[in-house]
Length: 45
Image 1 (tube, helix red, strand yellow):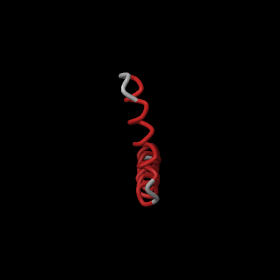
Image 2: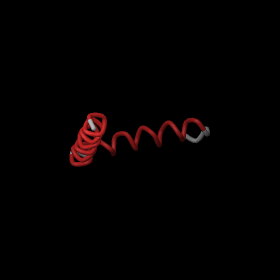
Image 3: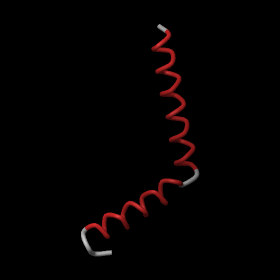
């Protein structure tokens, strides 16, 4: 019972942080950096 409570609490906290990050448009910075890294790996960027 205690493990389930901890797991659900962590799940709710993770979802809250994801929603906060999306609301602040933090995903755009991460996406931009990922695209640049991928383009550098294949030799285009």
